[in-house]
Image (cartoon, rainbow, N blue to C red; front, side, top):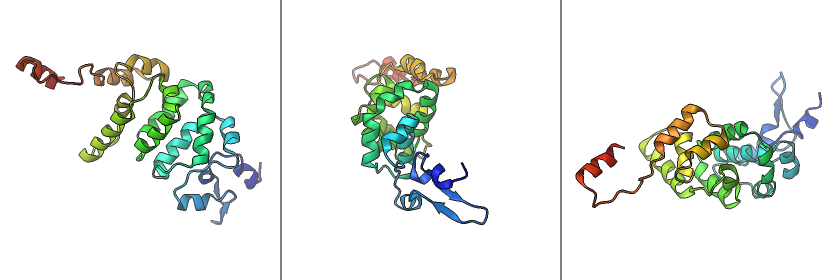
Length: 206
């Protein structure tokens, strides 16, 4: 179409429907500029309609919220994602993996991930209950140590213990990613103070 308004109303979020012509004039048909100023991620029109056009928009909604909305979730969009989440079963594992890893590395991921978990989205994506507490602790440690967010490290923190093989198959992880998860997924996460010196040094080494 050559009709920018028609094109805008077929897009996902208002902040993704801003246009500029060659003369530098801005065209905003969905109040996207106001939403940008307010750090708000909002679906265009009826959220359920936009999601039905591509169910990956569910994960995109949460990723954009974790990146640009400072973790403040649009309730209407969140409710629509929760009620239409079965549509994620129709999306390829590769597309879900790519979007999920971007989401996990976003600045306000712990807040958004907690909301997703309450809505049952993480269990659907991971195939098992998620550990949002450990995920949040890891994110806090990364910030405290000045480390960049590591999506694979965060993924294994979010998943259930010994979930490496399941994550590999469910999300179609690469061999490198699956190996990293296998190395990070230690079964003896708790240390027994009564262990021998050899047991203590072996634990510390691992």
